[in-house]
Image (cartoon, rainbow, N blue to C red; front, side):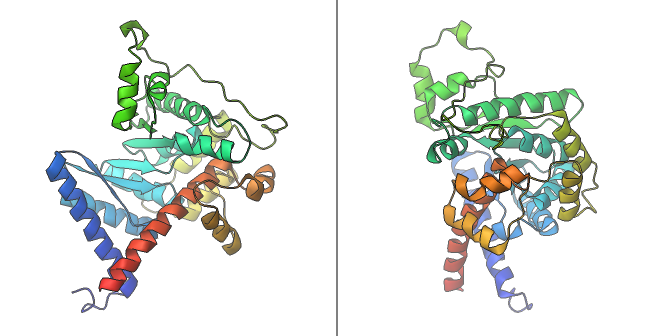
Length: 327
């Protein structure tokens, strides 16, 4: 039908991928009577209008159960705000820091945001910058506190997800988060700790220690970006949030942030740099980006987001190739 209407082959593939996602989502809903996240195609990640349209279509298919996942890009922020204003539940993904989630909460106002703790920790450990413990947890706690403060100031009711908990100790250390996502083993690990009822209290103010390796220039290399959240950044986020999501462009978001001193949040990459992001995989190389970070044109949370999106895109490309082979 789409070909008969002259739709471009790439758009046909995107449409088939959308249908597959919706069908599998509906199977999960019917099997488990559960809410299900359905993801936008990665080809839409920099297209605010297309992201909005597909988000609305997902919602129309199963408004009671479908949660639309939107990736952290300038276009995604604008599309998410429009979807949120329309009452669509959103899970804003690919967040790695408190400041990213403050911006998301202020501008996009989704239902949920994330910090992927394990990847933050792996970035530090894999690059020899520290022992890889507690950094993601500290970022998540800082993000939770920020979102609570945003709510108290009249902001949206955005809820913090502690993403991909791996053991019972993490559950104990992060008591008080809005939402946990974890496998059964992590839940059992917490139960096995057999905590006293009096010990099950809000621990979101109890930041864990993050140990960096000897000789690491923590301040100069801006390695605290994952949990730092100051008034300057909040002002930058307010400038971006003041844009009209119905008329603003992704470039408008970038300009608002850059003019307020937060231009490092969405690093802009040359073709060669974008290829390097893809080749490095989910965990960026410290050596590849440290000079740009020191120069203020790049950030570690921003690079982790770009790497995560590139990884998802690689998986999506594999599915698209299968679809092309069938049609």
